[in-house]
Length: 452
Image (cartoon, rainbow, N blue to C red; front, side, top):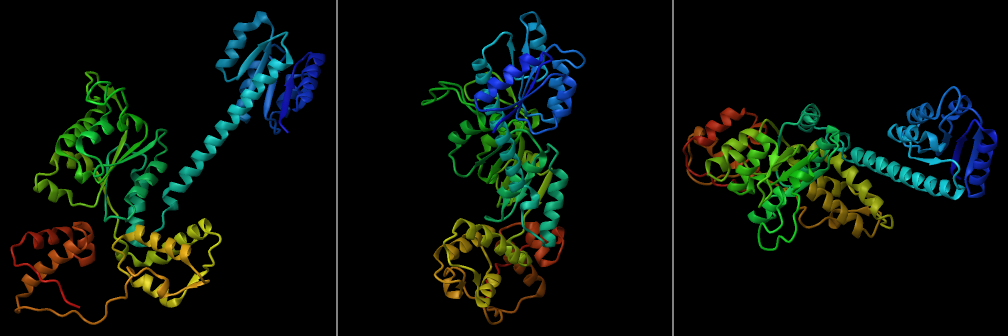
């Protein structure tokens, strides 16, 4: 039952109000002094109805104290007609509404009901925001490997900054999840907005990002804010930014440098405050060399660069990820008989290269749990794409070549195999990026792929 504290130095008036609210389904308690009311503000009352003018501590002070104890708790002020100016001041200080005496109890009931409904909605919104932040916080991401711990450490250090970020990694490694986690850690009040630059044609992407005025182009029947405006105060994730057309790259660079956006068909600029996080699986420096990406935009985006390693390069994280995905999938499918993997099935999961990375692993776990017919899943229950590990030793064909040429060929092979990311390739080959760059820039014949 909803509890209401009624405060009025006129005891008879307070009693009448409390009894009227009780008749309407409330658990109302009346007190005849503001001092007594102060002592009760810490109790679990859902709302406060207080007189404005009282000896000692007046209604304004009571409003302030109630907000300190329970900021979301609504307070309704009762006042004489001659004190309307002071009643308006109580609204400014946080009271929900004021009623001038005499008033009908049905009127108080109406405003009290509205105030409580709004308070419940705000509480739900706050709880949802907290839950969303906890769900997408960095602590919710799985990764005990040294590579992932370095990524998490860097993300924590830059989360509250406003500088652009560039997130690199193969498809399915979790670039979008990392971007969302950084937004959650940033405590920015605005929304997290995402757009896939490869999924939209140039003209549509321009309208999506920058917005447009009515009549700006055929079909623009009404004005529309772009995603940069929608993300103002928050974060905009530009996924697959390597696919963005050059003209849009120029406009994006202007937004990053001046924090203003001009909608299509408009002469007016609009100030925006969107934190830009760009993500791609491509080597943007190669795109620059090919004339497909602006070098000045790359300079602005790579203030901080984070590269998420492929799953096959952090196999120590596999047990943690399998456990996380199993728990989530079994919760979604409570009727599934699945309980565990056989040792052979686990060995197969651990040996697989996971070219689709974390996304592929999650989908495989979901499929196994969904289609399980027994408590234990064996190798035969895994998708055929999770193949048996390769056996035997590598063999080579062709003429014998100098070791230096072999190094060049193998560096190029590893670079291509690892998704054309220099930092990751250098780590796997246990060399520095500068040495890798020299090997890749050296002229040499194409390397045949090793046969197994």
